[in-house]
Image (tube, rainbow, N blue to C red; front, side, top):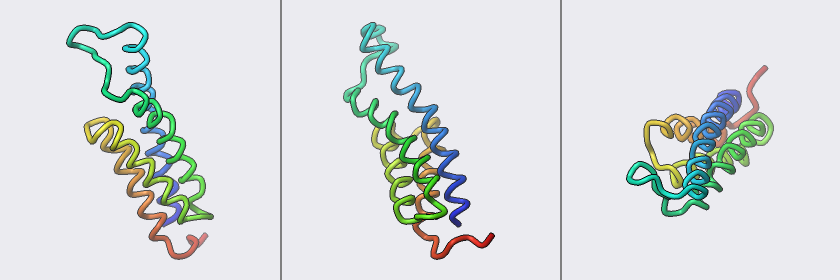
Length: 118
């Protein structure tokens, strides 16, 4: 289970990084150049988007890296990443897989009772 948590956390973290690049970039673009009519307007809380764009992938990948040796902190980090993505970006077509993979990786890490057999 710890190996599955590791794999899901890394994949979820990479996908969260892609979502984060676009989220952070969008808020910066609107901040620097202003609203683009009805096409692009600033979000309500750009700092929250920027923080989640930066922290969620780091939490997911760090949790995945710890999954084999320290399963409880790893699970908490991956669940925090899933929650951060959900709160900042909501559940949609581009966020459903990072949320699901980080969340499932976190649950599997927390549920792991003993180290995986090699």
